[in-house]
Length: 314
Picture 1: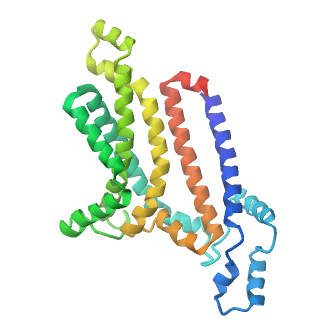
Picture 2 (picture 1 turned 90 degrees about the vertical axis):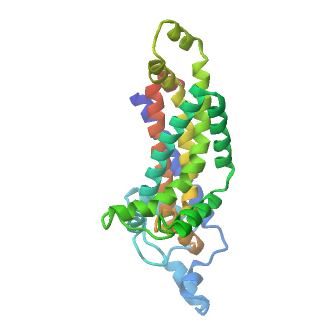
Picture 3 (picture 1 turned 45 degrees about the vertical axis):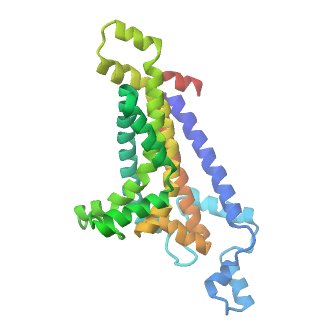
């Protein structure tokens, strides 16, 4: 298991390096005049050139990236070009908001997907068809449309939840829950729709295998067969899809946080990307990539624990 985890960590570090290099090069392509954006259109060409030189933008891109990488390896991601705020401080101030939403979405998606998928696979009939239809509809609906419907129905008409804004948990726990409930539901609906089909298919496939029929013939109870034997083999594909959904959720968080006015990483990404603030953007990219790597590492470890053959195969 340790060798398995070590290989995954090495692959993650390599991926982090490649993405950081590609991202920096693409963000530094000619076209954006940062000095002009900072000083305004009325600034002289000499002042703009001096500002770009101060930021180090007059150097080759590879040199700029090497300098950024050396500082990043020491934990220094620099400061925002536009606000002068430390990158790590700026991200850490908004991180709790996004983590609150993403953690809630992950828990809701995992629990409901497995419950509905197992229920549909075991019961079959109209329950199976109903779960499939609902999941297809939920997956097909655009995320922004789901979000707008939730806002109109539950925030505007019923007034059960606030339409916009965020309340920190340290200020009011009930207020915090009320501000993250609709964003969690908005992101969970398409995620559940994507995972529940995989859970259903995996469980039905394992239930039809020979060893399950043998266990039934030996007199084992259905619950023991399902939760001790079937789920151990059926969980791996579903967990893989859950990890893939997490990557999509990060993209959906951008839209959801914008609509609900949440001061999280998603809305921060939109704000600083439009400015071309490379230090902040690179910090956000690294945070996102590290999050994806850690989630996938966790899922790989769980899959390896459930199925030792997966460790050998990889």
